[in-house]
Amino acid sequence: YTICDSSALLLGNDYSEKIDIEKKLKNIYGKRSAISHSGRGEISIYERNYIIMIIKRLIDTFLTSEYSSCKNKQDIMKKVKEIRYRKL
Image (tube, rainbow, N blue to C red; front, side, top):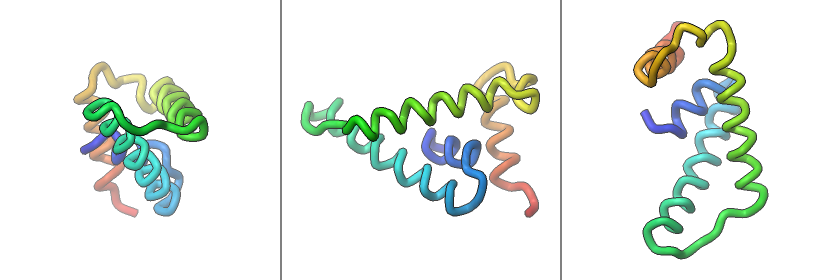
């Protein structure tokens, strides 16, 4: 899973929100890649603030009791997989 997909699964409250988060993060990640590989491009203040908000929400999520047993990346990815494949 990509960080964009995992973040969307963890933070989105419904299908539409998950898709929106994933789309925005992939767009910003694409810009980051262009900057780091070619030195061209820029990230807007809105995009920077969006990333900061996503990071804060992820930290808040990981500090909940539901994630307190997660000790490493593998534990978190197991939770993401459970979310991805759970019955609706």
